[in-house]
Image (cartoon, rainbow, N blue to C red; front, top):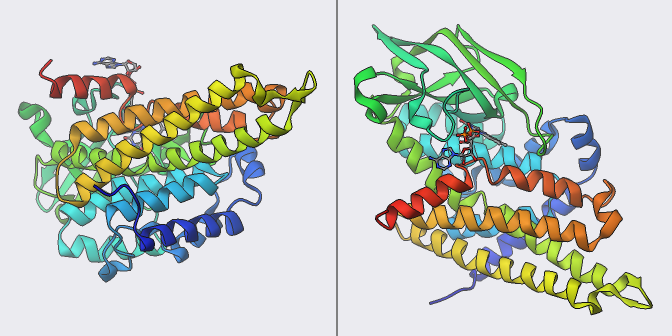
Length: 381
Ligand SMILES: Cc1cc2nc3c(=O)[nH]c(=O)nc-3n(C[C@H](O)[C@H](O)[C@H](O)COP(=O)(O)OP(=O)(O)OC[C@H]3O[C@@H](n4cnc5c(N)ncnc54)[C@H](O)[C@@H]3O)c2cc1C
C-alpha cells in the first residue's frame, strides 16, 4: 500500500496552490458580496489547464489520472478563497465534460470538449426539477422524437452555471412506460429555439456561482445531440455522480486542511486570561477533532480515487467519501467559527463564508440522507 502522492502529483498540487494564491484570490470577498461570477478567473483556470485536468490531450486536456486530479483539487480547495468559482469549475468538469467524454460520439467530443476545456464554452448538467430532487428519476421533463429532432418540454431547477452556460446536459423522459430506463440525456445549446433561462436563484453560500432555472418550451434538439443511447440517462447520471462524489469533495478536504492550520495559529497567538486559548482543552480538543477529520477524509478519498484510477467501480465508497467529507467540512467550519469567537462570526475572516459554502455540500450531489440510503442498500438493507 502506498498512501503518498507521487512526486509528479505532488508537484501538480503545489503548482495549483501557487497559481490559485497568486492569481485567483484577489477581490474574492467583494465578488461574493456582489454575487459576481469571475469570468476572468474562469479563463485563467482554463489557461492553467484546470478545466481539462482529467481530459485527454487530444481535446486540449492535461490527461491526469484521478489521483493527480484529486491532489490538484485538494490544492485548489486549500488555496482558494473563492469556492463559488471552484464549484462552477468542478460542476463543469465532472457533470458535463466527463459524461461527454465517456458517452459521447466522436463528433460530440470534437464539437464540445475543446471549447469546454479551453474556456470558450461553459457547461453544466440539468436533472433536478421543482418536484424531483432526491428522487431524480421521477423527473417530468419530456423529450418527444419528431423526425431528426427531439422536442423538449419542462423546467429544471437549481442548475449550477445555468445563467452563464453555453451548453447543458439536460435529462428528459423519452419513454413514459419505462421508469428510470425511459430517461435520456441531451446536449442542449443556449441558442436552440425554445431554450431559455429563468430567474437566477439566490443561495445561502457559493454566492458568486450562478445558479438558475432552465426553461424548455418546445425546444428543438437535433437527434445527433442525444448523449448515449435512448434510455441511457440513469446510467449516465450514476456514472457522473460517482465521479463527482470522488473528486469534487477533494476541494473540501483541501479547505479543511487550511482551516485547521489557521485555527492552530490562532489558538497559539490569541491570548485570554493571560495564556493562549489553545492551552485550554476546550479549544485543543476541537483542533484535534479537525485533524482527525482531515486524516480520515484523505484516507477515504484517496482510496476511492485509487479504485477509480484502477478501473474499479466505487458507488458505495464514493457515497461514503461524499457523506463523510461533506459532514466533516460543516463540523470543521462550525468549530473554526467558535474558536475565533466574534472574529469568526464577523465577515472579515471568511470563516462564516466557509460555513455557508460548506452547508451546500450536504445537499448537492445527493443529500447526506441519500448517501446513507445508498450505503445501507449496499449492506443489503
Ligand atoms: C448548490 C447547489 C447546486 C446544485 N446544482 C445542481 C445542478 O447543477 N444540476 C442539478 O440537476 N441539480 C443541482 N442541485 C440540486 C440538487 O441535486 C438537489 O437539491 C438535491 O438532489 C436534493 O433535492 P431537493 O433539494 O429537491 O431535496 P428533496 O429531495 O426534496 O429532499 C428534502 C429533504 O428530504 C430528504 N429526503 C428525501 N428523500 C429521502 C429519502 N428517501 N430518505 C431520507 N431522506 C430523504 C433529503 O435528504 C432532504 O433532507 C444543486 C443544489 C445545490 C444546493
